[in-house]
Image 1 (cartoon, helix red, strand yellow):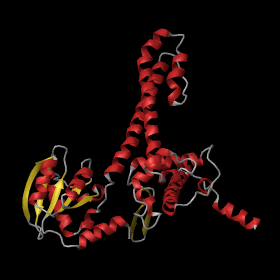
Image 2: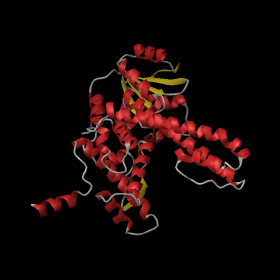
Image 3: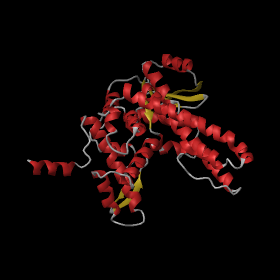
Image 4: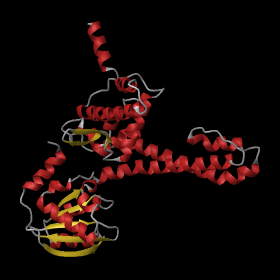
Length: 368
């Protein structure tokens, strides 16, 4: 049984306080609903989004079961209340249609539903587990770097499109070298260069900060997450992808079956089966969106012109040969799915990557 599911089964089976608290989290205030074991509403009120107010709540209802939806504030609030002795369950908001599709949706009603569902059965909330504070802080480096990269791309696109309207078509080099090439191209037009120079300086500054984040990411891998280095044995998986994978999964033993990690990242097809009908649906796209994007980009490189000969590439090309308008896209998703399983397998087994496992086995047999 996966560690996450085992944790909630133990929480479900052990004796807890008769009080169940539903919290609808907000940026400024939280709506609170307290119910007893029979489902009767004991109290309804709101508190400020402050640590002092949350600590006071834990004093008034010590050891209570607390249910809240996943949100921006749920990681630190769940850690705070757990440290204060409360049993906290974080509900998967995407699974609670009874809340977000209600025609009379309001914060007070949401808190009521969370409390009543938690009282009946914790599993109805489809509980999730937040990553640790350290992992969340390390992931912040990757997220901030991604923000700067997107800002640099936006600035470059804006300059190129604006100059194109004036009859100057700049080349599209790599992003770090764009500012220098743009200055060289506009050298004969100093007036126009003077206008775009502030934007080019901003692009230079963004490139410097991105390099700083790259150094920080490599340093974090070397000092705190050496397991990410093993994952970089796969060509197409760099420091950012490997570190993001390690921080997102966090515990390599959380999945009893390595293939479950593909479903965790939303890379498996959704299913709608009823009677004789069993429809083929697109992938679920659940879990961490950024990590899923990184896996897909790695899969695109593996299947691209510069991708090395390996089992993953051969598998993807075999799927592409089936033809069809969406064959290449489906093949990339399939390779990303197998890549996620392979990454977890290398991490879990502490094994070395073999690009052509079957071919290497055949060579050993022939040599012997």
